[in-house]
Image (cartoon, rainbow, N blue to C red; front, side, top):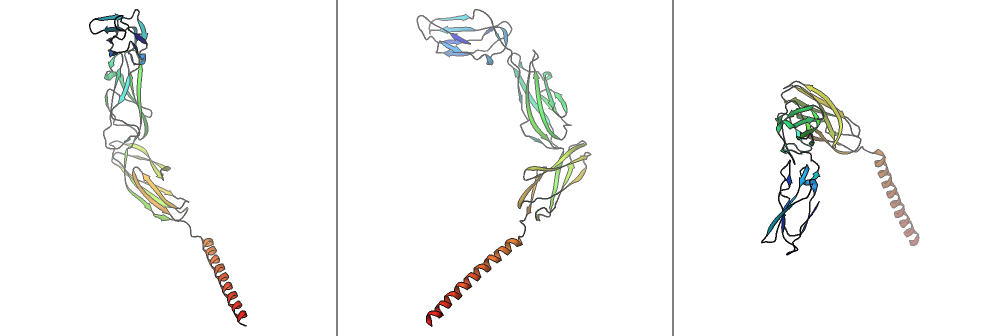
Length: 293
């Protein structure tokens, strides 16, 4: 949308765009103290309306006049803008912590969205509650996409989403034995799993080796109960391998195999060098004796 202004006395008279006139909405000022005679408006920033009008106020420093657009025009309505206040992408929601999800939404036409029009969802557990602040005390273990959905008076919806991981269990006493092995030799890994969430639940205990998920074990525990998760693994590549379970970290080392072939090759090479050296010494001594004779 392009708005123009001219003044016979001063071709670049300053002008302002006060609130646009609308029979259904009160619109904010669009711009003030403009020195150019033209101003372009991005309609995507305007509240929606079927009867929008623009008022222009122009002043040359002495005289002031206003004008309103000749006919109403249509501006499409906008969906609410939604914001989550506590959750961030990739958050790990730890056991024992209260889960209070907070968010808000505002709408270009309606203003702040009321609590009853804010709904929380999990792609795993379904509806979680309604309102700006929601206490979620039974979120299941594992990965969730959390969605806050806001609905305005016209039925238009805006959403905000975030991916989080819910932990129900606390992990202690990580054990790795033996800590040094040969290629493909077994390593026994154990960890104590404690349900401190306050309710019964199941969760997959995940073992990561070098940052890659190697194995999982599903464990179900009553509130306050404990169990031991056990993994038996092996690696064929020599070097140090990092272990992680539930935030606990450790490592084990795979030693390179002893190569008799390599040792034999080295010994053989040394013997060849010694034999060649002995032959050279003998040849020089033989030549000296022959020259002396």
